Amino acid sequence: MCEGIEIEKRKYLVSDSSTIGELVFCMRKYLSLASHEAMFMYINKNLAPTNALVSEVWKQYQNDGCLY
Image (cartoon, rainbow, N blue to C red; front, side, top):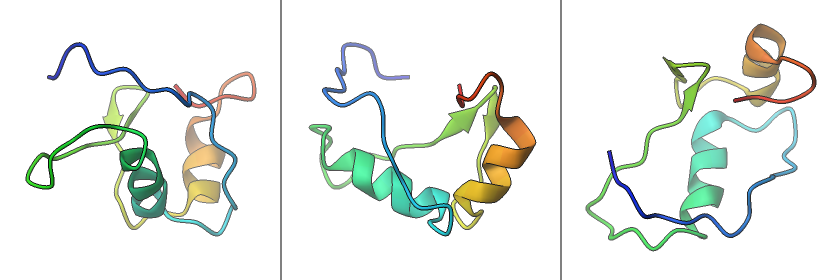
């Protein structure tokens, strides 16, 4: 786990037809990660598949209007 990485933008508005992979790509723009470093998206302690639609993940994991 990387520590000390700050994400300037903490909320993202994405289309429900976007995939988790597209969201990760968007987030990588705001991080100072080298091209060989990996980034994984965990939601509620579960690894989100990159090919899953944001809408599917939202329906499964949303809690009080947010994904954690």
